[in-house]
Amino acid sequence: MMKQHLLIEGKRYSFSDYFNMSATAEEISQAFEYRFQLTHLVYPHNLIVDPSLVEKIQSFYYRLRPRIKSHSEIAKREFMIAPLLHEIILAVEADLNIEYPIDIDNYLNGVIDYVLQSTEKLIVIEAKKGDLDRGFNQLMVEMIALDHYEIIEQPPIIYGALTIGEVWRFAQLERQEKRITQDLNLFRFPQDVEALLAIFLGILKPQN
Image (cartoon, rainbow, N blue to C red):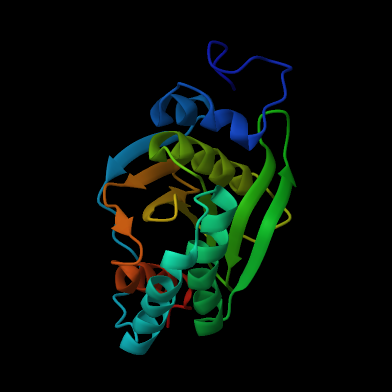
């Protein structure tokens, strides 16, 4: 299954090991026998987001940002990521798993930062301090791990979101086609909060 030049047989790899690899997303996806493409993603639904919710999140950021002195990954999670996720799970019937452990085999194991799960949808979220390309490699492998995770009842598409706090990027894994798509678009926080909420809520809300 694995390409020998990329992954060493018998060696144990955690999710964070893929962040440190110099391999491309396409090379890593091929190692797990998935196809990879980079294109413009079309998300479920075209929701109109409540302007008051957008204002609430942006106001929280602008009031507190001058008082936050740390730029660490933990600080960004608490200050930029958590408030957004809290509003999302309150707006839809979704569960939020934080630091979700998973162990499939030697190549697919570690802790996922966040897993958002509604009745029919699943979003994997990885928060990194920097480097969107390497961070995406880690996110992609976490999505592949959940595709192999039989304990969770999963939909045909697993969504992924990568953030460095100020910037978000999305992806999807189509399970039957074994195809991973990285969105060409980037979304800024807090400027693009409305678009971010529309994407998350559109994915998680049940389709009528």
